[in-house]
Length: 174
Image (cartoon, rainbow, N blue to C red; front, side, top):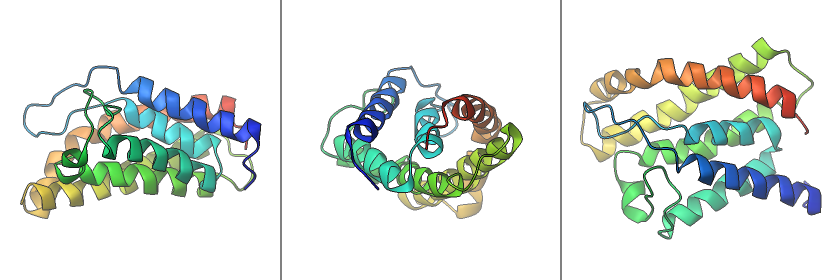
């Protein structure tokens, strides 16, 4: 991994996009304390555009900003309490998902459907699964109930995955 001016600029721009997407109002579901957000679109774009190392640094920086209390998360939230609450697992999933997606898509060029499938698998299986685990632990809820609560996110995650694959394919500059 070369951290030259071009790569650092890409990382900084994607970090700014993630933070900017956090300004878009979330959509509270009402049944669970985890809202629907568009910020994960930026996370998935990081995985498509950057290398695994660059993705780890970019998402790590984003999470570090949130951890120290800078309100970079959707709803202008930040601080340790956010990581210990119902969304904590999803935040960990952002890091793992972006790095895995960066690694998985770094091998050759894929058509749109191939990218969509990879993004959807990461978005739904990796990020949501870690989110479910964190949600169940932090809310002291049975895992099966946490899975059912997370089902509300799957249609939106699939739509966001299609959008990210479309944009990511156009911007693919690894």
